[in-house]
Length: 297
Image (cartoon, rainbow, N blue to C red):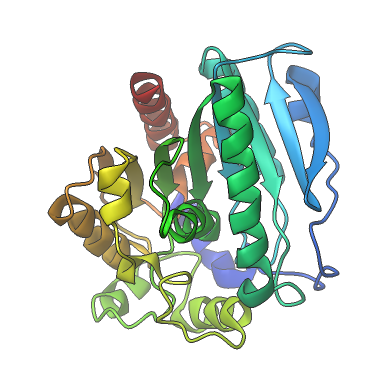
């Protein structure tokens, strides 16, 4: 199983390095992704976005905006670039756009989330004019943003262009108070309670962790139902974030929000990204994601 060789390294994997300056970091596309896709760079309201398509100048009717996880503190990894490149090839007529979010601790939620909400309005306006069908997608803390940004943006809005939201091992409650987390922590090979609390503290900064913009488990989901926005997800049984993600999945059902979820026992945090290591379960889960996105679009 994938988590066995990783277990000895514990939380050293994915540990943030030196804090990046405030603002959206400009990225260098990973060579493998650049070799397999056409990648164009643009900046919208100070946020760098990288559009991956199968050929230059493509005007695809579908788009996936991807938020990479990394504890709200790290830019997209090579695994994220490779994952997005594969989505680009596997999803017909779809542009995959990787968003380079401002990062904590120098750009925490009180500064960054309002910027991302404004970015959302601009992206949705452009999508409406272009006739694009849009999915917001992310993994881990990136999944938190893929969910919280639309929810914040939808407050008081009657019409939303978003087609769906796709969450991989989502972080949905920064309070980290679910009692079931204690037993899962013993099985999680890459996360600990001290690590996830540190991540929450750095991102929340001066905001309380029970703010729905930080903890979408506590948000009003009615706008998703009213706008027919589907919410899909993937969770693993050996992931510290799964107890809260399971509660969120149930909240979606109770709120009448449609979507498909894959729950896989004994799998670690963000296991679909492990497909690049030819891990069978990771590959199967990645293929499931692609099938759902193809059906959804």
